[in-house]
Image 1: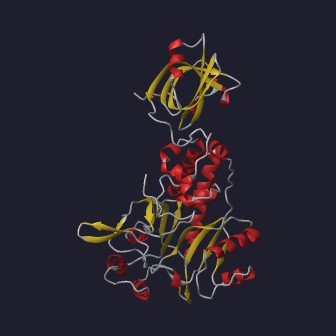
Image 2: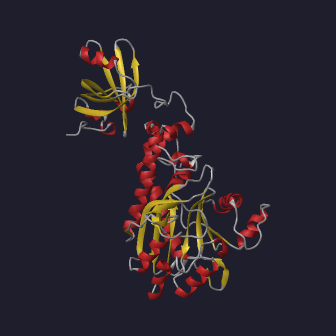
Length: 439
């Protein structure tokens, strides 16, 4: 039988005199002589347990004297309405069980009395997660993903699971992690891209995959991870890349709306407000982007991709012009994109490749894929890739592939930007970076 009968959030002042059992960690202790207070914390919040000399059994008061912050306890007792306790209720205990005692001092402050630097907090991430403001971030992240899934389910998208081990790199370049796979070479995937495309060609024309991807970038910025999670969507029988962007903006709206409607308490804990973005999101595209950047004093050679500074400039431009924090960047230079993207037939220098940018940071990359076998083979050659190593992917295109496209939106980055968090490690449960592989 489960120890608790209620989480703390399920107990209200209307439950007066009701007997409940709560279980969690000792968050704070206060001793006022004749009164002792235990603030118990679980995943849903906190509740005050009040012990009074002459009212509470003496053995419970003696037991309370032995408690330390972060001991794990279960408390059985009656709910009492009160004006001084959080949410107007407290528990007067009839039984306290110690489930686990700490054996040494906690190395980081859970109650928030002492602020630790981020590296220390990540070293002791398990303890850091006990802080209400940290836990709130991951509750919000969970709701973001839940909102995505609800939208996709309503839209007829099927969830699939694609492999994380690849026999060949999914993109040209060196940003891959090699792994030993029996007597062969393999790689951790950079993106679930290629297998999503094959699923669409196989007839599963509206699908999504939730899972990790890896990039072997020795990057130490506050916005990069070596392992990140994404919601990767693919759909077939599209007209062009705009069928893809319409899906993505509705997915974002659904996820943010879910947070706004169901995470009021968590947003209050971290002091944030969120607004559901208006659609359609504005779009800027190449080659017009070069002129926009030039107006702001930024010169990019014609035909070249932009840099991080340019992304921030475009965000400022869109915010001033369209009053939107979200926008799409379309028609990137083909030479800067992977082999599988579709070029604009009448202007082959540009690709039907679309990034979603939010508050000046890329959230996703996507667009329309090339579905014509001859074109794909031309682009494999142009990118200097091996026909043999890519045959597993290109061969099925011989047998009829519908026009299709998709995107992969980063979950940690979306959480980071939505909550105005400065470092993506704050929105990653156990981050993997060039210098961090534990815990």
